[in-house]
Image (tube, rainbow, N blue to C red; front, side, top):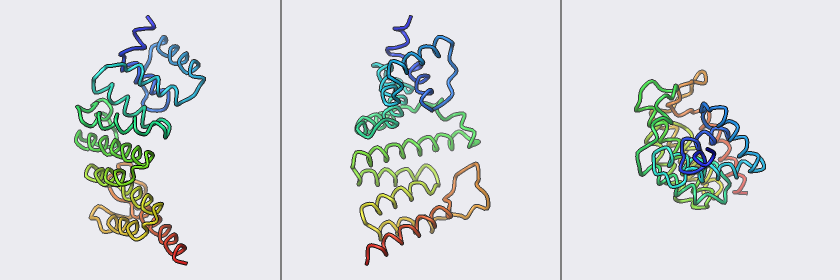
Length: 218
């Protein structure tokens, strides 16, 4: 019985992945017990459990299997960044795993839910490229993510990476793009349905990077 859960079983792999922190998959008593055993076999090491999620997917080639691989590698250690890049690109090149976003309560229509899912997946890909020290590609992907959602996040990620590369003027220009966007605003309260560029965040990073620039002028 155990073997059928541990090979070519993306459904169980996803349930195991939920024990790392994503989703809230309902499990049978046996599945809960098996997840507990796997964690113990992995010496309670998160990275090993994430690798186990990939292994359990086996050779399955379904939207769910590709999604689990993409998330498991992207949540893993820096040394697995190239695995994450390949898995996320593979996921984005095929049919999406609809159950991952179709009931997202942040948005009241299907297209926005799908866009939010794509936005986060592109951010995962950009982050994987950063970890792999492929910085130009990371900047390209963060820019690509902007077409799915209006958010300060990609602008901040780009500006921070440019700051680390000591390209201060480019970093400030990126934040100026956010400031000049028609989707930018100063929210009076933190809004639950996030589809705007929060100028409070942009202003804060702008001041920080400006300080870095002035400090390195001296």
